[in-house]
Amino acid sequence: MIKATIQNNPYCTEIDFPCTETELLEKLGEIGIDKEHLAPTGMVIDIEPAELSVLTDCEVSLDALNYLGKRMDGMEHLEEEQFLAVLSCNELNIDWGLKNIINLTFNLPRYTLIKDTNDLECVGRTHLLNIRGCLFVSEAENKEWLAEEGKKLIDSGKGIDTEYGTLFVNEEIAFDEMFKGSVFPPYYCDPNALAFAEVSFHGETELVDLPNEDIAIKKAVARLGADSVQDCDIGIDSICDIADEWWKKIKTVENTKDLFGLNNLLKIEDVCIKREPPKSIFYREMSKWLRENEFEFSEKDGCMIVAVDNGAEAKIYDNGTIAALTENVGDEYHDILQAARNIYEYCSVYEKAAPLKAERLSENYRCLAEFNGTVLAAKYSE
Image (cartoon, rainbow, N blue to C red; front, side, top):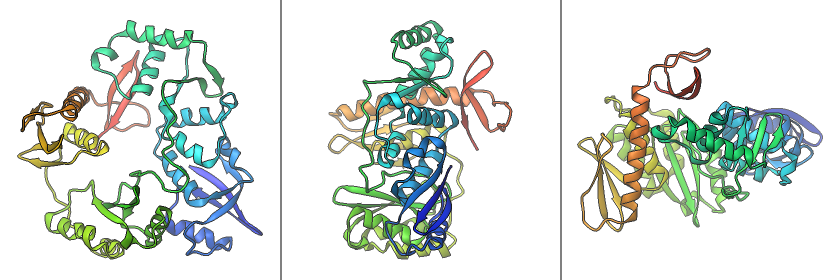
């Protein structure tokens, strides 16, 4: 969470980010800013955590600060420490304006934070998980190899001491500018949202959780540079299993572009959610990967049918196997094949893992990796 004192001379107020549009509008009223302002700004007088103090005495976009709050709120504890360690490291000589701080949340793999440099196996595991995102089971169990990788990192001599641990910059990983200063990169952050509107204009896309305050839609359209939502392309998605008759009604907005009407409908109507058996962990993780990599897919007889390579199709079974439904498949098919194998291996470990019992964690957590009784990775499951 970010706690900031914001000034619009001569008024000041304290705002906790992230906050809802309704909460933000109330705070804007306290400091004399028009509640219909689509790009409100304010002067940062004081801010916590202290690592964000570079923003003190700066005029900032309050919507951008709220977006940063959402990104930070979605971090795990170790990710937050990694994030704060980078911000606190003066040796990096980076101009940490609000734009770059938001971009840092998308670029944490560029920076490895090591808490204990003496445990080489742990160093290697932490570093590889950071830059790669996952390890094969065979790799996670290869203690000698992990220790060798850890030694390579420590012996590089490039570690920078911070109050959070030793920080290493992975120069081979570029710092990508996901946020260019106006349009917020799509980020799913409201677990209670019934649907998401992808609002696109001139190649840029904003994501709006639905239902929402109408001003959230207006702000997204303004950041895109469009005069009206009617000038934009609209796509609707959802992580909820919505009943077919409702889903057809919701999807009509892609043609009518009546996004405000849909938003109001979702506020007042009790949308019917299907009560079907839950999907397997493999199905959920694989479908998430497909969406993130912009593959279109449908479900048939419990399998995923994926469109690849100029009209070709691939069929993904729940056991992780994949079959080509057409001839002459190309690179995309092989990318999906490799992803399915990796995800199925990971999911198999997860499903076989014993429930994790640890202080302050419920029985809904499962241990994915441990070392000498210390949990290194866990996943929550309802």
